[in-house]
Length: 463
Image (cartoon, rainbow, N blue to C red; front, side):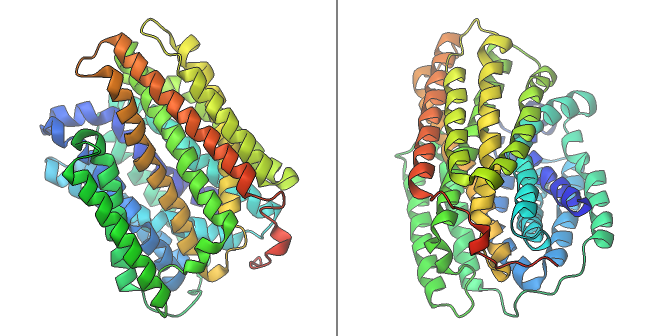
């Protein structure tokens, strides 16, 4: 249990930094004088480095040792957080955000791989993954709360400074708590595969993130998406021929894992988008402060953690398929409830019911996604498959938020009329509900009742 708490605490820092910055952006812009068109880079710089380097970070954990890569990632992330808090210019802040992403890309897959190799396959590991899933799914909601609280009490630097004592504590405890592990296999990093994967993922995430402002049919968006597709195609060719590939293509022939990766994109993209639009509605339509908005996310975040714990137990008893399908249906129901937001609405009537239902649904689904994705993965691939799972989390946010933002922007137009804004948000929530329903149908069609089946995959032994 102490190991699980340690690893989840480290992951909480990483996930928190995806959303904690959003609330502080106006304060950052005012103090550093960042141009409004460049402000999104405070978020994007972190996302690009994190999402682009996850596969390399995961394979490094397999080849260099998970404890070593985890500790290195924690130290890089902590020092970069200190640099961000002390930044006095736009360039310094963006450099620190990139360094945070590099540290997170080392830390996160190594931590998940440590869970896979520390806890025996079956109920013990499923409960550990349920706790991990609660952090992955709930970190976004707690990020809104933490961002509002820290910005109003300590200023924008507080959202980065808080990582320093947490990171230092995690590093010190990890040195004493985590056993020294030898690399699972001897080998070298697949440099060509790493460059292709990183470049392709960066092009994909950047292209999707910029698409709403640049235009989905713009030369920039089409060129970036074409470059990403070509790069991923070349990556597949290189990996098929490499003696020591970054990712064995056989991973993508494992139906439960591939299904779980798609569900991760749909589920996490839906919930993070819902948090984004709900936060905008509370602050810009209802006029709530950043701190009040953060506190209004707290009930749902707590319920999500409880639901994730219950979801892990339900998977042990009923299997992943019914839990995933029902969780995604609940997520769709929550999004539909949120689609009724109105200009003269209220938090209690327009936001809270939908958020609670959505959080229950995603909370139930998240552990089932992680358990299904990681079930039967060999020890020497735990790191890279962990990287794939976390990459899917990032791609889900990078893909669905721009798509739903484009849907929301169509009725809003150039003005900020509250009626048009809520109409746009309603359209986005309805589209999110449709995506969640599609994910539920995929889970029902693609998974067998026995997926995952721990007895059929005795790959891991408890050490």
